[in-house]
Each structure stands twice: as structure tokens, then as C-alpha cells.
Amino acid sequence: MTNKEKIEQVLTRGVSEVLVKDNLRKKLLSGKKLRVKLGIDPSGADLHFGHMVVLRKLREFQELGHQIVLVVGTFTGQIGDPTGKMEARPPKTEAELQKNAEHYVEQAAKMIDTDDLEIRPNSEWFNDMTFKEVIRLASSFTAQQMMHRDMFKQRVKQKQEIYLHEFMYPLMQGYDSVELKADVELGGTDQTFNLLAGRTIQEMYGQNPQNIVTVPILEGTDGVQKMGKSLNNYIGVLDTPENMFGRVMSISDELIIKYFELTTFVSTEEIKELKKSLKTGENPRNVKARLGKEIVTIYHSEEQAQKALEAFDSVFKEGALPEDIPEVEIEGKGGLLVDALVTAKLVSSKSEARRMIEQGAVKMNQEKVSGIDTGLAAGEVIVQVGKRKIAKFISHGK
Image (cartoon, rainbow, N blue to C red; front, side, top):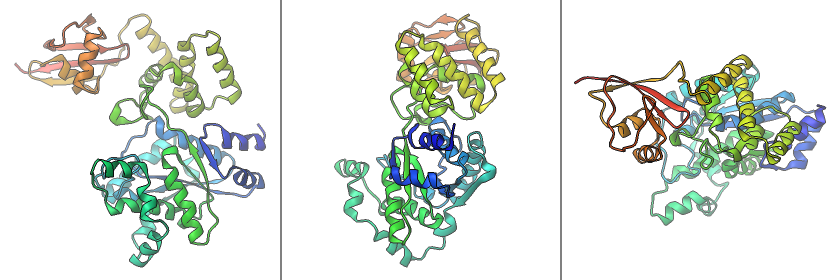
């Protein structure tokens, strides 16, 4: 692939919008080394594939020879991004955020070269910012502009509080770009307002406005909601090869091609062929297995990807139980199976547990469970939910 072809791929594959595309293309073709920014507020320690979509795009810029810069929100993370939130986020300490950031970088190393990564905590400049400078920054936007954002309009409608410090978040993210003299900033489509704020604030401080590249939001394994740990629809970067492969196999058929585009390095031409094969009758399971192997190879190895495929086939095609079944200890006699399923995170709620039992999707010691009031048998019990989720319950006590 020529350098020009790589540039076009950066601008088109797995991209929702580029602002301003012609301008950014010209910069990339000029050979100038650009400063490409990604901001993170490490509110949690573990990454999932939803986070890796933008890191994959960051890697493409890195491979073209540009300087990638990771801004760690050790200051802004104490406020929390209000985007999409119907209530203010609980604050975190700078120490918590710094610890999470270290873990974040360790996992990001599976996608980008962290030896050539510039890492900048934004407490570096915000801790010393004077109130005079805060007022100047606040003058870059109006209250009406902030109130036009959907989540704030919804809060007003539902008579929920909006705190003034939440208005400051996009301004602070924008000011990060000033301090870094960013040429490009990446983010998800839900970050568009904050990214545009960076352009406005850079111009106010006499800098050329950064270009913006937004990437799509990745749906989770449920095929509906944005991938997230709270929804239990995620594929974790630290998942074992077997769990990672199994979770990929559980995605909806409609998401197969999107996952190829956003989470793998399979060529665009080959993805087109895979898309065509699905339309002409190829079994989606076979294409999904290819996807699983590609993904596990990225985060583990080709050898482990092959073993994960064989283990999956052994368990779900031949009916064998996996060798390494996670164990869950239960005090007392065990209680209701519905409660145990929630405790082991085999389901997200009691209502889902009841629904799965009613659908005949739950087995206890390989026997189908029929009643929602079934108790968990004493001793060691292997429980399966669907084809992929399994746990060994060990009950203690009288």
C-alpha cells in the first residue's frame, strides 16, 4: 500500500466524519509531522473493544510517522464528562485517575506503540491556572450554547440539576488542544461538541484550529446498546483467548462486517469480499469464526486464536464442557438459582434470569431447568446459561 493509499484509509475506513477533510488530506500529503491528540478520562481501569476503535485509528496516524499524544484527564476526570449523562458524575481523586491511567496505557500497548507515545496529564496546566484565565476560557462559549446540548435539555425537562462545573468540561478539553498545539484530535461521535470546542478555543488563543476525526460508536454483543461494562455487553481487552473468542461469536450477524472494519486489520478489499459472501449465502457462523480468530490474534497470538476456535467447537458443537470453568462460592445452602445467576454475572438482572429459565436456556449439571423458583443444589453445581456462559457454584454451610 502506498503512502497516499494509507492516507486515504486513515480518512475513510472506520470514520464517521473528518473536519476539514481536504485540509487534513493536504497536511498528511505534505509530509509534515502532525501532533495527533486523543484525550482520555480514565474513570475505569479496564478497557473494552469500544475503547480500542479510536486507538486503532490513532495507530494508523502513528504508522504514518506522526506524533500521537495521549492526554490523561487527571484534572478533567475529577469533573467527569457530562456527555450523554442524565446526572452529574461522582468525582474521582487525582491519585485514582493516575492509577487507572497507568493501567489504561498498559492495555493500549496492545494496539499502539507506547514507546513512541507522548503522555500528558492535564493537571500539568490546570493545577496552576489562575481564576483570571478561567474567566477568559469561559468567555469562549455562551450559556445558550451549552444548554442546547441534548443531555442538558433533557435534564431541564426532567427537572434535574445541572451544575456549573459541568459546563466547563468541554472548555477544558478544548484548552488541552491549546497547550498541546494539536493539529488533529480524535474521538467518538458522542464527543463531537467537545472536539469542536477545541477548534474554537485554539482560534481564540491565536492557533490554527485542529482537524477532527470522529469514529463510530461500537455496539456491544447485544447488538443494540453502546458497548459498556455496566450493560455486560462488552468484550474486554484483558479477556482470556477463549472468553474473547466466545464473546465475538455471540455478536449479532448484522454487526459482523462493522466489527471487521473497526476492530481488525483485515484489508478493506477482503472485507468487501466477506460482505459479498454473506449476501450470497455464506453461513454467518463461519465468517464470525474468522473474525474471532483475527481479534484473538491481535490481543494474544495466532496460536492461542486457533486453540480458542478449537475449544469453542469442542464445547458448543460437540457438547463438551470447558476445562477451565470459573468458580463461584456461595454461603449457606445456595438459595435460589435466580439469585445465583445474578451473583455470578451470568445474567445482568433477576428479570433476565427468569426470562432465560422460561426460555429453557438454563441448565444445572447439564439438565434443563424449568422453574423460576428452582433452588441451587448443595455442593458443587455447574450452571450454564445459553451456549457460552458457564460457572461452577460451590455452596458452603448448612
